[in-house]
Image 1: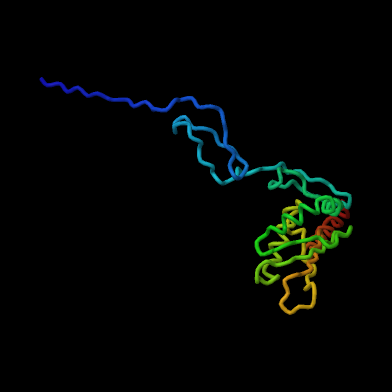
Image 2 (image 1 turned 180 degrees about the vertical axis):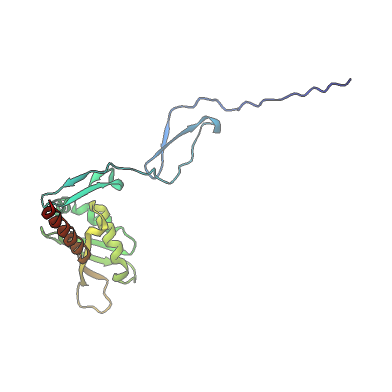
Length: 201
């Protein structure tokens, strides 16, 4: 009778199973730690920020409208309409710097900001792009920076700043919380059903 003997070899990791507790910050603001199974090298940054979920609360504003929490801003409430102008006035330099860094713009400066939430910007283009192609980007970046949904910001007017034929400087007026026709229709329908509901009671 022949017997075969099999041996199993177990390989232990050559690395120390304990690493120091240091962490490394990733570009998106998250942190990674050292991995003991990878010779205590830092784990790879994922590049994808973790999704943020906010509670479904509403803040009632002075004018009776409501705003919700914004997951892109640490679940802070959006600005109420009456808070927009003071916030813009206080953060004017930061707004101009952030908007001026958008691709296609050489500089952006706030010319006027009115308490009725109309903001006039002087925009100087850095490329030969047409202003029309950059207005949506400007509107969205402005809305994101001041902490409101882009649907609350409307480009109400733009015109060349000067009389040159090929213009690179423009005056752009943005309106915050200007009601669109769709918003007015939805408010009208809602009001109708509220009145019918009160009459039914």
